[in-house]
Length: 182
Ligand SMILES: Cc1cc2nc3c(=O)[nH]c(=O)nc-3n(C[C@H](O)[C@H](O)[C@H](O)COP(=O)(O)OP(=O)(O)OC[C@H]3O[C@@H](n4cnc5c(N)ncnc54)[C@H](O)[C@@H]3O)c2cc1C
Image (cartoon, rainbow, N blue to C red):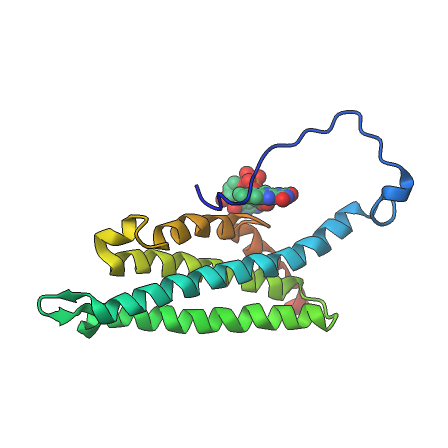
């Protein structure tokens, strides 16, 4: 559906023997390593979602100042203004979560919960912004004349890859309940 620049395919490994020297980490610790990898990967996907949201928002905002309907730029209408205001506000909130979780990773702090929060929030902001941007562009928004239809298709991966939004909420809720137990 999207992300066509990045190939996705099934891979099968039959009777593969990996020499101990090539093993990543200690035996039996694969799951732990994979979970740590996901914590970082979720920040990357959140950053991708943020970038797509900003791209769609900027195109829509510029368009709103130029496109005239009923004799006025569509940005003069409150219906369009509210969409842009919500996009701008949610983008700033997502940016705070993405940069905050990246800062925690860089400084060596545990960041599983913050990565999950950044990923679920930024990807849902991306969904909102790319969807609303298409609406602001009108029929042109559905065509390749603007990159927004591509951004909308690319967006869906950010809600699924590196763990779905439901899975991020499981991770966050587990941490919330743990911190309030006893
Ligand atoms: C483009 C792309 C690239 C990818 N690249 C990689 C990669 O490089 N490496 C890799 O390992 N994986 C990769 N993935 C896999 C990705 O991480 C999984 O697709 C994703 O985690 C969802 O798993 P699933 O597809 O098996 O969905 P499922 O687990 O079958 O989930 C289906 C639905 O059920 C929901 N669900 C499942 N469990 C629960 C639950 N407990 N509570 C509530 N809802 C639940 C999910 O949220 C989802 O809505 C990639 C996926 C995509 C789309």
